[in-house]
Amino acid sequence: MSLVAAVFLVVASFVTAAISGVFGMAGGLMLKGALALVLPVSATFVAHGILQLVANGWRAILHRRFVGWRIVAVFAVGSLFAGGVMAFIAVEPSKATLYLLMGVVPALLWIPRRWVSLDAARPEQALLCGISVTGLNLTAGVAGPLLDIFFVRTALTRHQIVATKAATQVFSHLAKIAVYGAPLIAVHGQGLPPWWVFALAIPLSMLGTVAGGWVLERMDDVNFKRLSRLIVTVTGIVYLAGAAQLYLRG
Image (cartoon, rainbow, N blue to C red):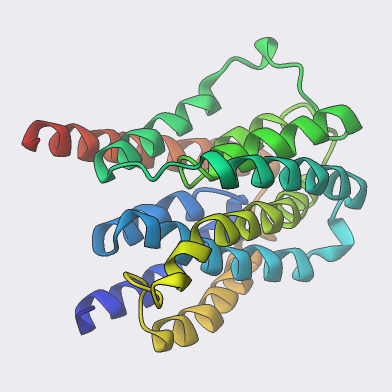
């Protein structure tokens, strides 16, 4: 890996963690795309899982008083089930397909609320959330917009949404590391960034999470929902354009 690519990943880790610290999503979607620019597809799943595990875990710790722990516990059961199943059937997508999937996922945010009757606060739906979100994470590499659908009808505040989603995502990223990491470790981490990139990116992602939390405190619920949808949608459009370009190139 070149020095320029390594610095790019370190900076991206900070910026995307800050964005996720504000909106509870979007940052992970952006980071996945940044990783795909400089890493093989399988390595993006592992690197993304490691960096997002830290960013989400640290965000959950910072906002732990707002975490809905019952939701998290049931989600974890569903996540474990999905990870176990996907470990046997996971197929590495091409880079074009990866961009296509990442571009399509944000469209979930535009499903009319009257069509959605999902509520993560209900145990059976928290279980479904764990299965579906982790499954999508293991195929597209990101699942923030799908996760958000399970929270649009909850009575949670923006702080509770960000904190609870962060805690649930810890399990999705653990599954990603386990499913895609084992084969890479078997070949001595082929395609992964060098260790010092993670050594720099991890504390910077934690710092970015703190910075995002500072912005979150100064944002109201209306702007929180409006801006999060806008950022994720624009990111999705960029990925769709990238996928079209890659497919046209053959």
